[in-house]
Image 1 (cartoon, one colour):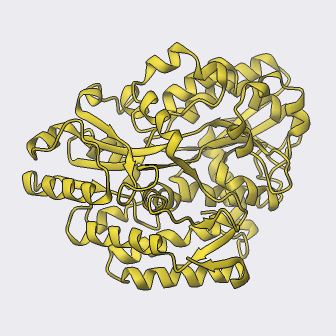
Image 2 (cartoon, helix red, strand yellow; image 1 turned 60 degrees about the vertical axis):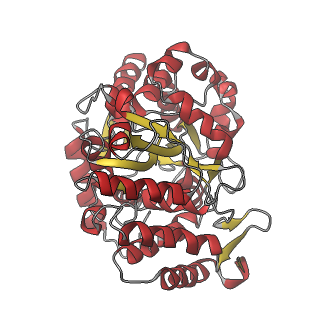
Length: 450
């Protein structure tokens, strides 16, 4: 989650800016004709770095009087938000173009980090090709648009068919309840004791990955929500919240999930994608639609993944409701509020979003297309055989509450899950801690008992 800037010294901001500039290999920033572009890069996520390098070359060719400084922030998601907040803390280090998570749009817009871009979108013909959900993802509390969607995603279950065969489990496994998932993990533990049966993210260091790919995949399958969509009040004493924590307790207490020491590793997400799954050391992973993008090409290519891995929708708790559930998010490109030349910054975004660049990025990042021309492209559909499956989960998907305080509230979810998996708290104690923190953030008048 994004940390508060209170107490951060000017020296800390300046030191980070120097360090980030040194990593970028770009031109020096600060001049009116240089755009500073900040984005995330990790060992398992290089698609944005590839895109930005391509766009930099195209943009500087199109506008020879302008220069682009790329600032790849090499950090996992939570650390990325923190470092980005540091950059935004000073006009001297703030980026002109920002790789911005959709759930941060409202809080960062309210904090004055982002510039509304409605006037630029009005003159951009391609905006008509974006679906309404993608357009809404970039809207702030004031109804203005602050980001252009790079694509969306869903989440489901990956399972190793070879390990399932060894456990006498079906290769077309379709779990219909949480208990089906736990039972399959128990069978794997018995047949392949050296393998981790099940991964669900649980640590504070993984931040929103724990909240969204882990906990909320459970919570929204109980029929409960973080915020009641009919009253717009945050929910306390939620039965579904407690049941989700009980799932964590069961999985970790029975040794079905990773050793907590491993699960607390800040690089655990990359290790799951690049090592454990390809090496057959993990049987079941509740994770995002983007994983196969890293197996198709690049340093972590794994050609056998199509034959080895099965895909299943995440079932609701007991098969009720719609029967399945998913979570969707996505990222945008946004113009920083301190951009020297907002039009130049938007021009860079438009260049990044050409049909050709959007197609390449969707392919490499495993994104669900939000432009109608790309979504209909046979090249897009044929590139990754998992696209069709993960696109089908949109029917069951949920979105995080789009409120400025969501990021602060969400940061308390991994506190609860981590305390449960490490044995520091019972599920009931962890839930009480979350509820108390929630009330402290939004006020009791903005909550309701579940």
